[in-house]
Image (cartoon, rainbow over all chains, first blue to last red; front, side):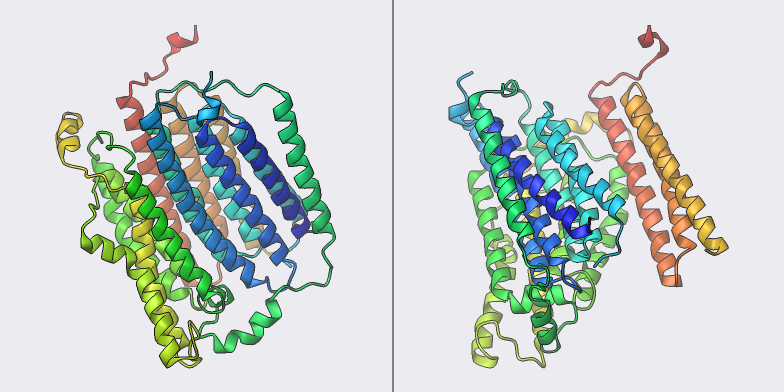
Length: 100
Length: 316
Length: 103
């Protein structure tokens, strides 16, 4: 199996795992982790496909670089929202998950 | 094609997938965050294997380091709430699993359907490189060919800081005084980080590196400094000026180029390198400050926290 | 493969062995202090051996200098991190494991 193929499949697996984690977790921090994992999966697919060319295609690399920085800022915002929700409403779960 | 090491790649890919699954399943949030940081570092290794050193640098510093620090910070501030029980296999959970599996199947099918002799934009980029002002194709793509994306990316960062500061999540917990070891570590690391960041900025034109990687290093130094001696930004105008300077310089250069160059963000080929360096320098400082601001928040730390913890301080 | 290549392989293998040993210590030892001890000591030694193995393959003095700098920084950072973790564990009340706990 070529390098590209291995990492492409890994990227797809990460996207699926991240999606499942996002939908199945009730704690918002876990959802944030799941979204980050999905993002990493997408990055891996992009870069694996970029590596099919020789030398590697630089445009997906630039896009992933942008993506990493945007992901950290989105995560920071999401975490701030989580802390604020926890302070205001006393729970780190979304309202629809709080019944227990 | 990167040198073929299928056994290593397969092992690394399996490790990554296993780590991702583990971190989403483990009950303890702290453990999940630590696993996520390990995942980020292994991901950086995967980027190296896929011949993407610029991305590897950024991933190690930002993806594993800064995101990990943010997550740990939140985990500790959230302590005290009972974890909800893990989801029982219910109809809803099985439906989600099937959805994820269907998505996976579609992605695999579409990936296998890609034509074999496809080179992406490598050739077009290589043809345009001599006029781009730099020799590192990723930097050229970031700052020149797709400069508009980068401009908007910095705007997104600014929006994130605005959001985090507006939310004003909560007052900071009391911080124990930094010990002598952390101070010594800082005294050695901070100047090195500044030098390394400057080097990465300069080297980004011809080697892996660039403004984002340099900014990540500076931000790491800033976060370390904050952990040892908590500081606050406040929201005074010097801070706002420094935060927006990157975006402002980028936008001003872009508009100037409408008059002087070939159009919005169209550099004149002879001086493109200088323009790019100027933009990258301002952007690096701004982005570093933004990343630290995301971590520090805007709440005012006073010395109250340190005075209370003075009892812990060993006699100097 | 030349002699220096074989030496590099041996040093790298030894370094990897120490890393594995440190990880086993992390997984098997009873409390945070013993784990820190095993991890930091073994990892520093492993790092030193690996960098020595890589230094044999270096192609310029600049590369050697960079490897030396990496070693110095990594040792410094790992030792400081170990100290900080241990200090924090002590402050939050972790008790060092003693033989009596095993009974």
